[in-house]
Length: 400
Figure 1 (cartoon, rainbow, N blue to C red):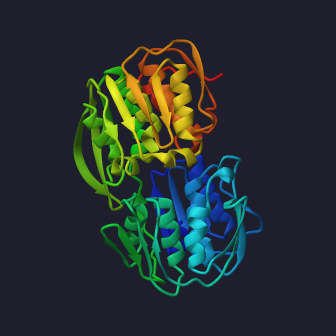
Figure 2: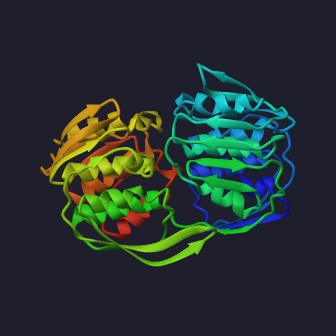
Figure 3: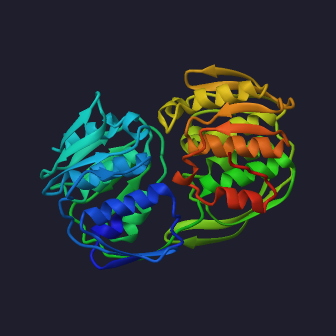
């Protein structure tokens, strides 16, 4: 997105060719941005955006939908953002509200869901007090602020992930962070950059979990260690995990390191507050680890999980209960009493949610318990190489 908005060209190395990224790339091509797609490396030639000929289909990507709404709200043309069945059921009112406060004109379906019809308008600055800690909400406002007539400020109840702030600064934006408040000055002269994408800690988490569940040593190289994303490491260490962080360095303004996961017995813990914000995408895996940890794990303050690609609390609770796990579902989390063997030869449903599917695969493989998992068709959304990488560490995955 920033490469398309910046002057000059941006080189992105080690781009994950997941469906979400490819949908975003396709949208920018439709907006008139020239792209040289060389596979692992993508070159984006920035320039003024142009009105697309048709709707922009963002597939399954909530991040693309919400950030693109910010990008397009201040452009001098109209467009429509749409997506698949899952994406069009997810809440978009959380970004429509602050964008409308900036002067945006956005029509939506069914009380704030996609498709979103955006009528490009001149925008003004805003001071927005976000009721939730959401990097997508914050980033939508910041991206809209790039074309606003005055500064934009976003304050959150907790600090959400800060990849947008780091990258906006790297591209030349005047952006300041003061505790839970971020302020962007308008009309920056963004300049194309060369970016090496760090390894995704959300993807690495599945293999961290496998090492702990299977009691085997796993080494994962070049993992992004942004402190707003390392909640999963902190949670697992509190559960007793022995995880070494080595060879720390920096790529594209992001801290990066190698992780070594050592066999470690896990025990139950209480998880809430800042832990939830800093590990929100890893909670399907946390459910699985808690199911095998000794004692009780209590998760609360995680109601955001109910409006992801699926209702992740309900999906994971149902699947784990089918596998014989003692779990009580709560509106904002769950209580899990772990440590018992799983029931073998069960059939569970990941409900088309890529993270639930991968987490259940890791749980079943590490427990050496054959499980048939339905609803795995969206794994390519975030991790198209998951099966290949799973097999490299000895996980047997068969498709039906």
